[in-house]
Length: 282
Length: 194
Image (cartoon, rainbow over the protein chains, first blue to last red):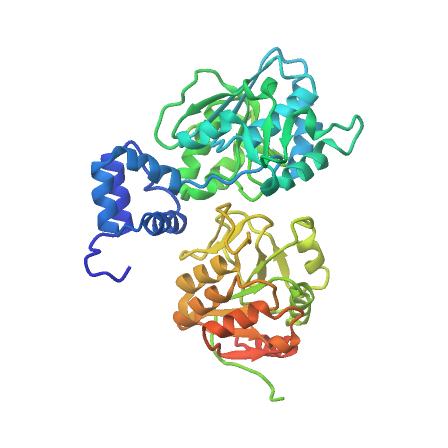
């Protein structure tokens, strides 16, 4: 951006966005938020000053920015080995629980929500499960609710599925949970799963939680990588506060918790368990 | 061929490779001096079906330890950092690494362009960028970014590449400091002041 009229910085723009909308990206990780804002400027052919003007005057445009800035890549059973662990080690522990509360924080277009529901169904745990799924973007939530995904682009969904559920007896076929329509190039989640999750628009950074109950499992995969360290810690504290003792937090395979929180969770395979040890609040 | 050496001081080496690069990277890592200090960041395309196992295969002969980093891990001397499967890997100003699951770039995640460009911005003239064999043009622009920020750039000699698309794409964009064979790349690295 060599334009001499560009007299504000992206940091200042994020402050303006914060002041004129409900959204605060100021504690997102610098490199990635700058990259995303530049992408928005390219896609909409706007200078930073034009972006500021539109942000202040057009609330609908702000929603589009939120959708463009947030990263919404997800897949069914991403990292199959993690899901094998969830299937074989984690979920079976809940088989005598009358209720299992699960929260997918930053669920994007829902693929991991359905991955989890499939495993719950496979273990006969669907009835006692309550599954909440939240995201900052309404657009991806609408997509998640529809449960419709591209077929050819996502052939790896079926490979991942088979790695998790097609190996051990009883083998399960993909078609138990999805209708495949090759001619229209789409796969659709079957209704008995699709209607179960409670999808809600929620900004993890800013808003109070939209539910009162505590959770047995919180999924938040590849969301924290877009936040700076301070914000990461606050969100992990939030998860910690909202887990039952012994509850599980599942992050992305290359997300780690550091410093103080290492004492508040015990890592078991790919799962962080809320430690029962008493700690003073800092 | 002359003995290839350099006395420039680098703080970071970033290396990109795609099709055919496994054996080259493996050779470089296995022939580095065991006390090789300058951290290496490796952004290598993987076949979708063989997502795991790369770090183990490279580690088998490597002279230095290879890590698939977590988000916000610090870059330390004496280590090589390999972009984890299915993530983009970025070098940050504060000497840490960050990961992202953003859309593929040039059909690739990790994208070599992203890793190389981020290193160019963060480490500027202290960056050494190396681009190896590959069947795709990802990496060419990132290597040019390193050159544009006064870093040092090496492209693998296309004659020695399994597939020369990637080095040729870089050579069409700009002229690197060196065009070297894998053996010369090893010589060059081992000659660097540590």
